[in-house]
Amino acid sequence: QEDLVESGGGSVQAGGSLRLSCVASEYMYTTYCMGWFRQAPGKEREAVATIDIDGTTNYADSAKGRFTISKDNVKNTLALQMTGLLPEDTALYYCAADYRCWSRALDYRYWGQGTQVTVSS
Image 1: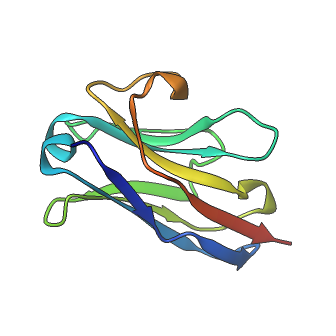
Image 2: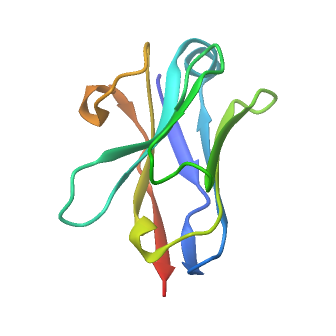
């Protein structure tokens, strides 16, 4: 069963930090491209950061320099460390995975339930 379970969302003031976590099955964690995506009300779901099985990372321009995606091999956990948060980062954040890294969010087959991040000014 391909489950992704996110945690770590919350409410912070602008400039604050949050760390999101996503626990995956061992199979998914070791063989799939994984990533973080977000969707704000009225907007399309967009990629924030992805990490391939060889460790190659990609970040949205909005995330570069502020967010860091990483994998904790001991716990099969994908993390997203977010710093310098802005009100425009407010969204429902999802963990997703698939056998390869896709350029479009909608091409990923496996999704978590999402965790809310709210940044106040």
